[in-house]
Length: 101
Image: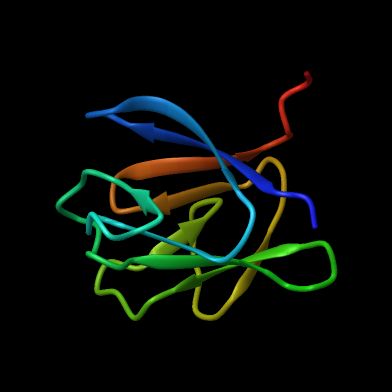
């Protein structure tokens, strides 16, 4: 399965490009696979995972502030694709195409 590339726009760390190859948790906790620095994000905020059919999905982990895809709060697992903007707290994560080599 191909990885999921995301650009994380974190004011503390700046923009960073990450490639997820398996299930990953996004949140404030240092144990998360993708650590973000925002008090509005939960310690364990959202989970990104492959669906098994070459796609990826995003799920909120029962947070108070919610998780958003393209400015809409998700209520269950949501399929994500290139161009989608995920918001966790005040941090934006954009699903991007793999960089060309």
